[in-house]
Image 1: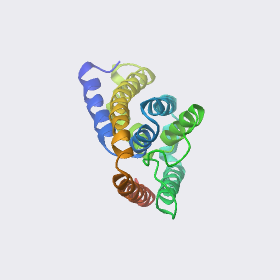
Image 2: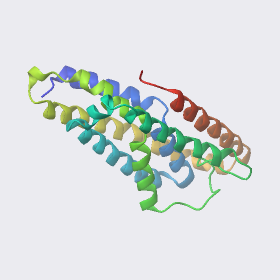
Image 3: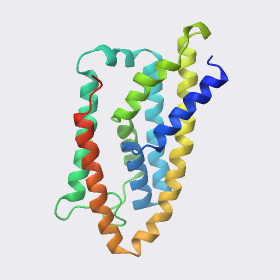
Length: 210
């Protein structure tokens, strides 16, 4: 098992990742603003399941394969960029709407919210890098089985991310009433988030670990 100081250090890294804007944060906030915190929590459930998948992949060495197999990481990165690009197009096209625009589209069902949250996390290169590059640095083979340490560190990350993302969900839900009463801000926010989605897509497409 990792010692206490190692767990605290990795928890701090995980918190920094939660506080850094990325696909997970944007999706959770957008769902919460559009449909309320209940929809955000359902979406968060899908995101959490994605964290467990990443943790198990790391624990059983599949992420090591992504690290060494040519183009495997790039395929994941480009898939995420395409997804963000689609969100940007939906926000900026004539007659389009950002997911943040309250009441501009029919609410999604709970299964769809959960599924999109899950897929968003699986296609999130930021989380891939967390498990590919950062987590292995906190593992010390002299302290026991690598599998046990990976599960302990991954569990720590999941707890930190769940608490942090839940706070964003509840805070975003309170914003929905504000935007509903102020159409100008809802429109401005649609353009702002469309540009954010587009910028993240371009950055993700051009990013490289080499």
